[in-house]
Length: 223
Image (cartoon, rainbow, N blue to C red):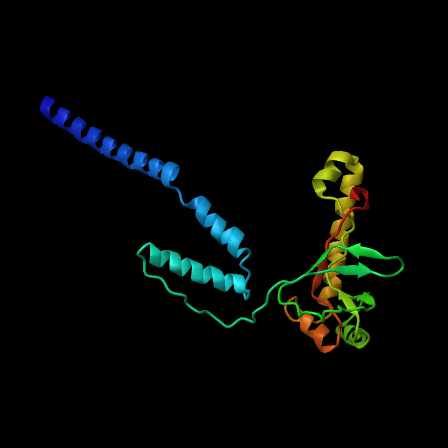
């Protein structure tokens, strides 16, 4: 009985010793031979953002295949679907009236490019409507105009700043007003008869000068 117990103990010790050696080997590899910094630099800094349809995404695919092949692993690029290629360029937005002011903004994915001279146009937004027919009638008025699509935000401050600097009553009022505004906006949007994926096509067909961009809200207090 004593030999049996001793033998079991030795096997357990050997097993633990083997596990510790494996763990030590992993720690040694991570500590002294990690490739994370190099790989992150190549992927994040040199290739950059890899959005669908962009040249950077194709570059990332090619980079990954070459890395695997270098490590002795079989890899290939499997084409899934066909995407319209695009690349984000320079965005500059200026408000001309009622006063000149440069606005912070960014074109959204797959936006068409403008000419080098840019576009100067009036600005409009989706009005409050009762039914799709009313929206279709409004579409006839947007030719050559900028169309603001997204919901207007009632504050440029994040919630944590409201919670820190505002009174509890003001913060609660803000959240209530924002929820009410969101419900009203979504309800109005649903009456257009379009979804988020196809409403831009309606703007394009109606001849809008630009519609697929987002203004970045900033607080005047921070300027």
